[in-house]
Image (cartoon, rainbow, N blue to C red; front, side):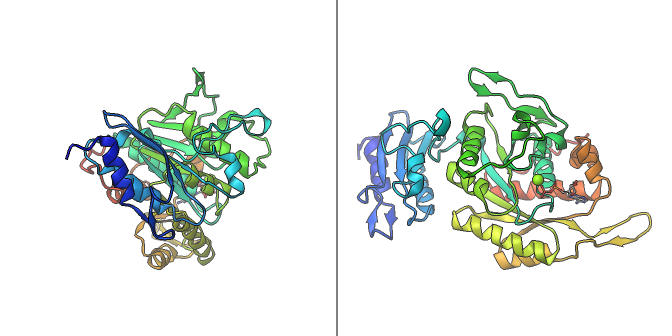
Length: 373
Ligand SMILES: Nc1ncnc2c1ncn2[C@@H]1O[C@H](COP(=O)(O)OP(=O)(O)O)[C@@H](O)[C@H]1O
Ligand SMILES: [Mg+2]
């Protein structure tokens, strides 16, 4: 066969079926503006209505990637909701979006950011369970293995990442791109760098969407292997904005061993399932701690909840991080524990979780040297 690459890409898309419409994506009119270059760059707009599962985008992506001659690094899919109240925030097919309220730049439709590597959302149902602690330390642990890591503080209500890394500068802007700050080998971006620390953070849905999209698009992240997103608690606008703005590879759900936190976490995990983001696993934080000197066991938040949640969701328990005296103090001084005290029980578990995550993510080899010191 001597079909052009463009014809083969179209044929691949025509093999993906939308069960709801009993038709293939192409015939159903879900693919617009397909552009294929001879050197394998492919882009198209995917009209995904609310009634259709987001997994269709994944299927389409996989189908196109499998076409011989397509460069998977150069595959751009813009997901657009063709109807509904959100449609006004998206460009109609083929037309540029109008300016947003207040003359802000128009939000881009959900896009691929292949330079970010694997996007991992760290979420929880409840506040104060250790999401930021887990996000920060996973990012540092991955960076210590020589991986290129970005950490986006998606907790727009209470951005904690600046404090946890001891970084409070204003990020420079070079040629219209915000330059991420860097600490412990991790590239960082947080609303905390940009707004007054004491500014009341009452952001509403559309603004959160813009912040998330700007952090993805207008920050000079460079080429990364992992992109960790620390989210606010719950199942709100930040979670949805993220899922709608980019391809989240996996969500990690943080919970304490306590029953109430587990129930909240379950709801959080279900939300990710609804938007077709696979849950990589559960991190139980603040698990019982035994003082090595006295043998006294501290189980402030109960035990076993992480395991129960993992079983309920049929996902792995990635690890159980013990309560660690001093962790909060270190965090307040801008020192993530995996760097400040790598031999502590919590740091060891957090490092092991980072390794599990790479394993679950697949693709990249785990045989990277563990850099210490
Ligand atoms: N394993 C742990 N042991 C002791 N304190 C912890 C642990 N994990 C987190 N903390 C502390 O608990 C508080 C809440 O953690 P944080 O990561 O900010 O939670 P979240 O981001 O979920 O609101 C912080 O003061 C943090 O230092
Ligand atoms: Mg937090």
